[in-house]
Structures are given as C-alpha cells and as structure tokens.
Image 1 (cartoon, rainbow, N blue to C red):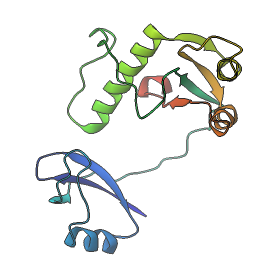
Image 2: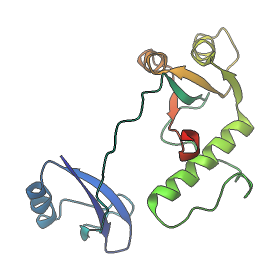
Image 3: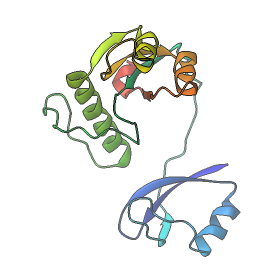
Length: 168
C-alpha cells in the first residue's frame, strides 16, 4: 500500500491510499479519483515529505476520552457555540492543523455540555443504554476492549483521538 498527498484543481488537499503506484496511475487516468470536499475529478499528486518511522510509540491501555450522547452519532457532532479563542488556537494552514483545531473545538464543546464520568465511562454508558440511569451526554476514559464491547452491544460511543499536546 502507498499513500499519496493529493490536491484537486480547486485547491483542496487530501490523502488517499493505493495498492501500488501503478494503481494510482490507472485510477488517475480514468478520472476515478475524486476530491472528497468538492467532488472534482481533476486530481493531481501534491508535494509531500517522506514518512520516517523512528520507532513505534508504546501502546496505551486507555482510550483517552470517549463520548456517549443521547443523540444518534452520525459523524462528528458539530458544536452549537464556538469555543473561546483562548481555548482553541486559530488553525494554521494545512489539513492536519485544521483537523486539530476542529478536535480542540469538539473537546471544548464536550467539556462544556457533557458530564465527565472518568474511568466509570463504560459502566455509565451501559446504565444509560438499559434505562437504569437518565440519558445524558457523558465523556470519560475506557479501555480499548471496553469501547469495543460497548460498540458491539449497540451502545453509541465515539473515541476521541489524542491531540499533540496529549502526547507531552
């Protein structure tokens, strides 16, 4: 598998995985690659830096934070009120920084509008799902196995990825 940084003729950047460089060439020639932002098929390779792996990070036992909401989860929840500038730095150019900015906004919204239940996350989510506790938005920590079991049982859960500052 090979990952390419791509850009459409309207300036949207995105990444895509291909089985080989030949696979990319064939799909590009057939205009089968489209921009996820605008749908344009005028896509080209964008400059990219090499990915040098120095070592694998130690696995974490806990999913840093997870979210359960009484509303159905269909993609990322959209905050209904923007976080203050002090909480969310303005995103710099580039999709990665924009993504981190959106995740910071999501976390700020979550902390303002949901109950933190800490390591009791899986237990509280199950109680709400089975009607033993009132439905509300919660967040907290869960092991990967607990999060997987909740999802397997049909309990809406959304693990939140760690941000760069979480790694410090």
